[in-house]
Length: 363
Image (cartoon, rainbow, N blue to C red; front, side):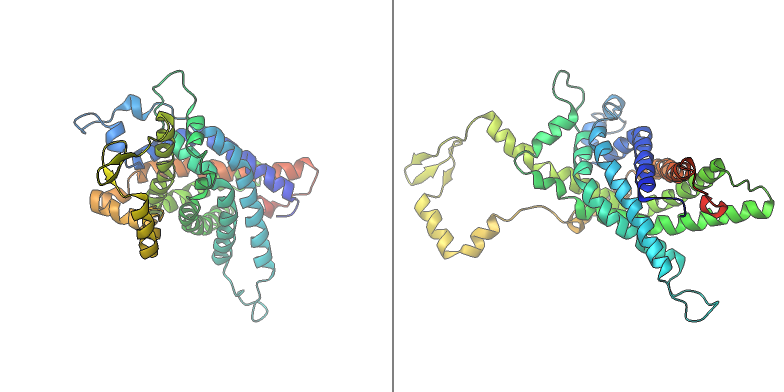
């Protein structure tokens, strides 16, 4: 887009992300809680027939601070990468003969550009997303304690790298989502522009540009959201599981120091009185069976495919689509505002500097 600098794109993307986060964050919290494996236990009544509304709707803005801090640079990185890759691919898109169609269709260029942008964005956003989703599940009914974000951060003190466990899951959801959304978004935007030209109602104003962008992005985003809901459910489970192991480890240390092993007639027993191997036997077993010993210490984290199969087995196909309707509504509002504010913002910034923004640049 002529008249725009990288600073314009960064500022417009950051402002759009900040606006959307504040407005639609409660819907995202509800989606996380509905997709949680603990949904029935935490948010349904004793008979599992009705929603425990006070618990479900309490603390809807828990974890929002971490997301706002990370979303600003991640969204700016996404749009900078997206616009840059799209410009490069469009410029170096050869045609076999003059007047013929270029080698790469525009939807392919938009898909590639948005996918590369997402890979960059997800690397910045993943820790905040893990913190956010775990904070959204903290019980907010307890008064006087630290807020949900602080409680969540304490879970990862012993292993900060666990905050990046959800990168693959986040990228696995966002890549197909953006690959679907942005080609549809660009096509719908072009179609609405041409429709208004044919009707003679096109004004070329900033307000019209923002409205057309918002409608196109919201429609495309809701469709992509519904299609990718199963991946989103798996992603939510993986990110919630990233913090599950940490409190258990810390809980043991907080309850007291580890209890020493006690001698027994035929070896050692632990604090609960259960027999355990002697140090000599353990060393001998490790020497004789090194592979088996290493396997016992292997990280038991589950893959996305394993989690998906568990959901199918326990909850059926319906479990993979849990929260899909809410996610479609949230994404329609969020995407419409996000790209609408972004498009309008970068045009406004270019005009404010006195740049000559052409009519076609409004779309």
